[in-house]
Length: 319
Length: 256
Ligand SMILES: Nc1ncnc2c1ncn2[C@@H]1O[C@H](COP(=O)(O)OP(=O)(O)OP(=O)(O)O)[C@@H](O)[C@H]1O
Ligand SMILES: [Mg+2]
View 1: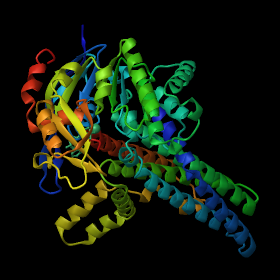
View 2: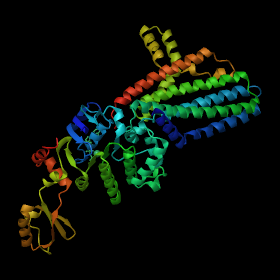
View 3: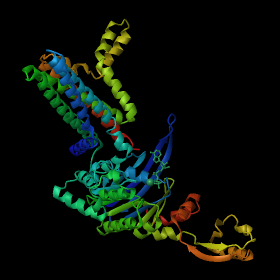
View 4: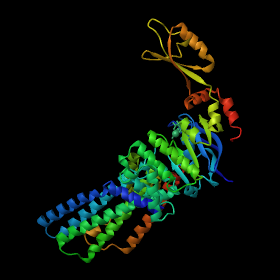
């Protein structure tokens, strides 16, 4: 079977400075293969190079070196766009068009009859929950509504591969859930979805595989379970101190105070030490709870280099 | 594909109330017709045609430049181009589509203004004469000129801000209007180097002089067919070259 997306050594330097232009590497030799029918999550902290990758794949910017193929066709070949949909980051569309007009405009680039266009536009507007705002000019659209129409235009022509740059951003909880349902729907129809996100639970719930990118470099590829299981378990302790009692010196740095309450995060192995210290300070413990590892923690560790070893290990089967 | 982009560009111009300039043109024509009818004897035709064609040219130029310089820049700046270029649409098709869309807008606008001029002319003269056909030729020349100016504006807007593009386009337009003077200046200088430079500039700069047939139309002189053919060919070749340059630049640049 032919791969949906083959990225081969994709590299992008941006040039900064007006006079003496210095290159700044935003993406560094990204190599990645995504099979047809996969839902693939592209994770990484701000500035990691996710948007850069998607813009390269869509031909909006040009690689410094390397290349990619989508459905077997080089990205320079515009005909591949017949089978590809794209939701840009913070999408923005023509102010002067209504949602329905925008979709009709975009649909005209594909070989669809007027009847077929009308039918698809109706159903896709329904799908993203914009039926009631279909004839409102886009200048009156809110951020979340723009995100929704962005999703609509990305899937309108029933592409085999869909690229979504942070599809959940700006959406309310209902909208997020609808976006998740749309992605699951696409998966059910056998389409390939490649999306970037910061939201780990979304990635966990939706993705067959995820890749983590930091500083333009691929850190690892694997199933979401593999990525999350690397995280060291840590616990959060919430407590109050009686009047006149001070924080144990060992915990001073780790504690944050909100009103009368303090909060500390400790790794599982140090929990008892921390509790001993708090007992000595006659603290009233309010709760001890397990922290679900967040993507942020994971990134911070990756950036710190602590997890590189693991990250490379899990990439074994993926690359 | 190109046509789809062109029609949307036309729709944008209409929705942005670009055609409202016609109201000003109409007011101008009404005022002129009423005033001229009262004070002058015999030169109504001359004044109305002169004023009307000059206004058509200026209104058109302002539109061509101010919309032209934003044509591509706005889509890059607002990032509306991202989703559009994710269609099976080549960048050069997009560019030509935008160009054709503005040209269509200018043509419609000019046609309506010409209609206004005809009405004003009929109001003062009560009749049309055969030599009035020169007016249509003059209008056609104005359109050719606008097509050339639009292409230049589009070229600049592919790599610079609207502000700078306006300056460049306007500068080139003025230089192109005086290009004959530039050459005559070169011919009278002693320096052969300066002579060569001015000659080079004369051929490089678009020559807008030949597109001015306002006086001929106002005096009812016939415009030779050869000039029509010459101007058409000149504009077509110059526009093609400018659009090729614009496409080469735009097709290879990163969108921000
Ligand atoms: N047009 C540009 N010119 C110069 N540098 C750029 C440009 N676009 C992006 N960069 C740089 O490239 C790096 C990667 O940016 P990119 O937008 O791809 O990150 P990202 O992973 O999408 O981040 P986010 O999660 O914030 O969306 C950043 O350091 C950014 O500063
Ligand atoms: Mg991004």
